[in-house]
Length: 170
Picture (cartoon, one colour):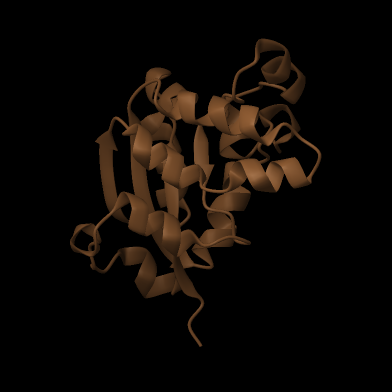
């Protein structure tokens, strides 16, 4: 059984605007993860709505204002260009999620992407009625990363190639 898998990774508008795209991508590549698709784009509203899917329902079941949070996240994703990637590697879904850090940057370990480049708190976001500015999205292992990849990329956009890391780590 292969432990290789693929995950969707998005550098959100705050990461693009702050000019940390290269530094974030370096974090992925330095660890031997392979970028098999990459593009910069402005997210169409219908894609953002599909991407967040039933998030409002899931959050409401947890006692949160799911509709408001989903609206904030969609509005934020539409606020500027994003960098969207498909990352492949050994347990890539779990590894990229862990490398990204906690949803709330102030709770992230300092070596994670959010821990290095952001510091926003849940309270600040709630008080400001905005989505948490946390730089990146990484597919959640408990959900369906393949569903997210299919929303953002066609099969023809996914590239198959060999990296030097694969020779030593895969």
